[in-house]
Length: 369
Image 1 (cartoon, rainbow, N blue to C red):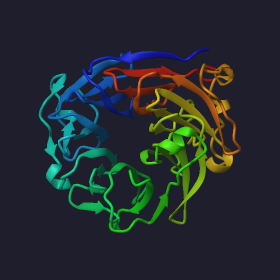
Image 2: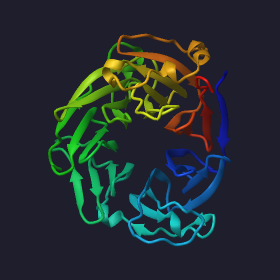
Image 3: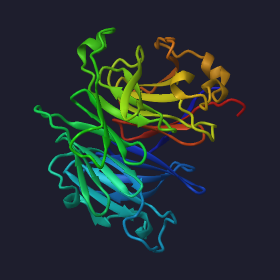
């Protein structure tokens, strides 16, 4: 059994971001591009279901709950909105229920003033009626429809906040070019609950050249683990104990350049699977990692019970594999192009956005499939 790939074609420039949503019987993929559009894709057909005409290049995109109640007949039955952050320091909401044609041009709400934005937004994240943004001013801004909270540490030197991700309840993690991971209680905006400074790793040539700036964050399905992709090509695995961040492992000997995006695939597992991690790098490689049971918890499923045995035995040319006590590098995919984002479907597929205009889907062989 081999990994197969297929393409989503429609964008005209680099695809910067992705998000997957399962809503009833529908599986949708959201993408944002430098071509000033966002697209909602029907995964079953790999075709564009809706094209959103933005005003500027889309830097981040997220599905979320509509800010207004009520329904209108349109192309989509989903009770969902698309939130777009753009390089001109704006954030807009597009209510999918209002899409009467395959092209949606008018936003439902302009949230730029609500967020009080003056810097470019690098990532937005939606959770339970709240939307967060990480921006070039070193801040995370959270809007709940009525109140703005600005999470910003008191630091003398400026830096870019590159990413943010809700954990659960009122906790959120963020990271940036200052090589720090922050854990926040959104009710205490001026001081993080805890901060970890990522140390420079001198074990490889790439680690010496590139500082470990935080590029991307991903919580595991159980929210027990936080994976952080770094500019030196390594991945930090942390957990939260009594509101403190504890680093458990540093995944090395994989990427030779920055880790652009991370996700925890849920292939074939209805339960939380904290042991399988996928990473995409600017070196054009995709890796699948296994985290050990001590880190992930006893309820997590071993990847060998999910992935095809033939896949785990197959080695990819020009990729060196390593085995550590805390983790294993299972296999890699030579994607070639510099990756920007990676997400997983609930079945057997990952989707990769990169500096080209296409989105690539990879079907991963599973056990007993």
